[in-house]
Image (cartoon, rainbow, N blue to C red):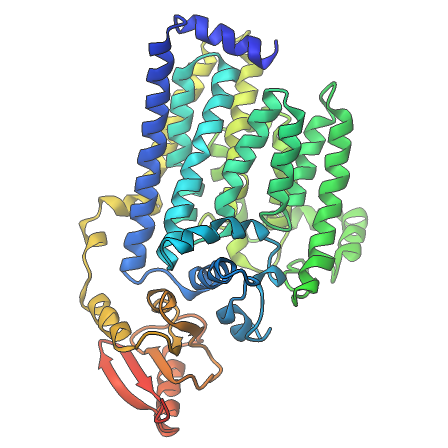
Length: 488
């Protein structure tokens, strides 16, 4: 049955009334709107409470601000801290030119809060094409509404909006559009969505290649599937080995597979000659298996019964085979956002395949998926919205606000990681790190350890070094110290 005929059947099941269709649109709009508001509240309260960071919110803020001024996406905070130089463009870190689409928003409000709200809207918007996909597959709007709610409550989405801003914000929406357009049989739209995904990050080529594997199993789609496999893998190589170095980065900067080999050819040799070592790496450390279980749990393991699971395998392997960058394999942060829609859509597809033999399964499965999403809420960041303390500043946070207020606009300032976002919209911010940068202004943290220092004594020693070199203390309260050089 074609998508258009299926849509017609669904309308008949709904009574064919315009009022019925409008009612479901309103419900979907409420789900999406409430999600966007909740995500915005979560990220903005974290920002206001000094729980955002220079790494990574200020990086993206500086990059998008540069785009808004029709410049390369330079992030001085990234370039200086990682020794790439003050003119470093983030295209040399990750291939994410899609960030330029956010530049016009900075003409309305120039500050990192803009990115947080944009991310909230993008993440919530993915519920719309996922709803359409589910409605077509399961034949009714009701389960589609429940899957949409489960997606908006799901921990990969919540943890993404809770951790600053990242290019991952675009991935769920574009992935959902890709899958919905494929379901609708619109080849041109599928190609456009795949091309857009390739602009999100260099390893989105792996996601496109994984989708190509799915298409190879579909009659009428095999030529495009082959093109996606070859094109996705080829683009991932092109972006990481050519485009990123072209913008000042290093092709091996994120190589995380030293336990399997020093480079890709060596890793392939290990996989062919010692596959047990490769398999063991998937569960080393065991937290990788916990994250995988939580991901598969989003669909109650149903995604394993769909060919769509092949779409997620390359990205999951990229993360779970890594032996460094521990953030890649835990449930926190934003990395799971790249595959969350695949898990939900794959679960829907698996249920669709057996619903003729098990008529009660769709309703039971959808209820279980929603129950899983709700049950995980207290264990992840969304629960903070129910905590009154999330909306109040404690003594240290009030001291932090007072400290950043001392710094004038338009200056160069080294700022502790959690204080930098509050200054990024009005000053040029460097990360206060383990190498003295001798900026005219410094906002230091001496009350608790902060990234990237090894320990608190090192931070306090840095303040003493600044004072010994002529810096004057302008503010000192509750572990926050503001210093300025005699020349400023």
